[in-house]
Amino acid sequence: MRIAAGGVLHETSTYSSLPTTLDDFINDRGLYRGQEIMETFPGSNVCIGGFIDGAKKHGFELVPLLWTFAFPSGLIERKTYDALLEEFLQRLKEAEQAGPLDGVLLDLHGAMVIEGIEDGDGHFISKVREYIGPDRPILVTPDLHGNHTPLRVQEATAILGYDTYPHIDMNERGQEAADLIVRIIQDDVKPVMSLYQLPFFWSTACQVTAHQPMKEVMDYAHEIESRPGILSVTVSTGFPWADVPDVGPSIIIVADNDQSLADKTAEEFGSWIWERRRRWYQLPFSVKDAIKQGQEMGKYPIVLADHADNTGGGTAGDSTEILQTFLDQKLDKALILYIVDPEVVALAQKAGVGGIIETEVGGKSHPIQGPPVKMKAEVKALSEGKFKYDGPMYAGLTGNMGPSVWIQQDGVSVVVVTAREQPFGPAFSKTLGIDCESMNYISVKSSAHFRASFEPFAGSIFNVEAKAIHTHDFAKLNHQHRKQDFYPVEIPYDSAPDF
Image 1 (spheres, one colour):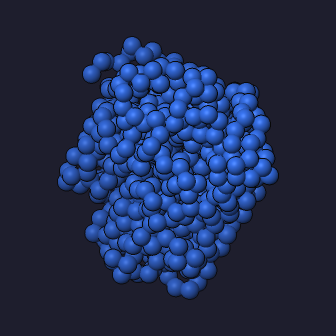
Image 2: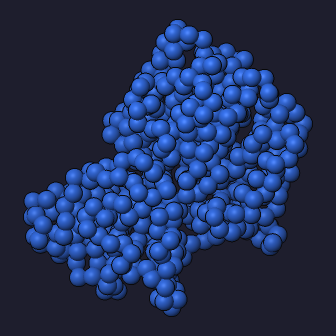
Image 3: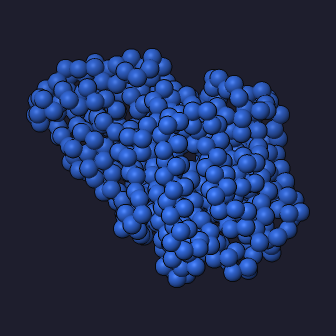
């Protein structure tokens, strides 16, 4: 049994002015070909790692093609996508020439948008299908934040999305796909799928799968998966910062050779979620209210999730409202993770450790990110940016924040970086000598992924609506392409029952 595997992953914000180029794929998570994949990802918490581990478990030959991942940002340049797709298909052709392939495992994100192609993932799947024909299985393992489309359901054999947010089950989903593709090839099952799209905005603060209210959604999904004839349930909360026709949450049911069962189950689960839509929507705290409430609770560190400037969603990472507030309130043991500002990094490098710099930090990418913050700060540490993940997210992989610096003004510390990556955990901070657990206040440019590592020691956590390009006040998003009215923007908030 020979099964090809690979993928091109990108979460695309059409609101970001930062284009995504081939260099981004090469320099961010990396571009791996052939044997490089087999050498890099075994045991790692990404789906391609799960494919490799699943192949070992079942004893089939995994034929690695191409795998690449660029940090979330703006539209992918068409020439970049065309080059990646062409190479992927060429490698698929060469793999077939070396011996018949029984199927393909695809590691895709589900919210990829390319210049001139609104459904990037659907387009990619359809091109693979065009090559291998209608009979051989294609299994796809998308992120929980995919904007799923009828095209994907039509072209893929089965779609198996993540079950967790933060995403700590990527390897598991890869192994699940490997398990299922073996069953399909051996004629044990014949998957059919049904897609149920939901017209509402799902607040990030309501998506953390270990906590209510999201836990009850996933509990329902797992109950459905235990039913006879159901192979898989995918809950996708959508990615609202992609202005595309099929933006939004969805349910995908995979059943065994029973389209009626798949359709009825998708409608059952989708209707249940829609009826409870008020439970999945929540406006975040203001920065000052979150600090005040955290102080009243007296549980430290107080962690503020700066989700409107979540670099993990494609923002620039240089919004300044929280930094300015920390300075204005003269907070002690306060830490900002991270602000993207190469100019400040270069200035700090020139000054050296122990030097004092006077500069303006952040607020340089877009007016909505806030004005730059004037600081007179000591350079506490410098780094070239390389580190190893030590938490559940991306366990076993390495990262690189690029040239970086820790600067401090009075009680406020800022980690200023070059690469746009959200702080999944304290690992990089440790390399600079920062002990996050000793802090009283921590701001992270992340929505929820940070929780996997920060939650065990956080006193309190608040998602806050600081001024930035990825607002969670969804009425402010100027969607032009979605194909229906959404709750609670066009469909009133009070139209939903209060469960």
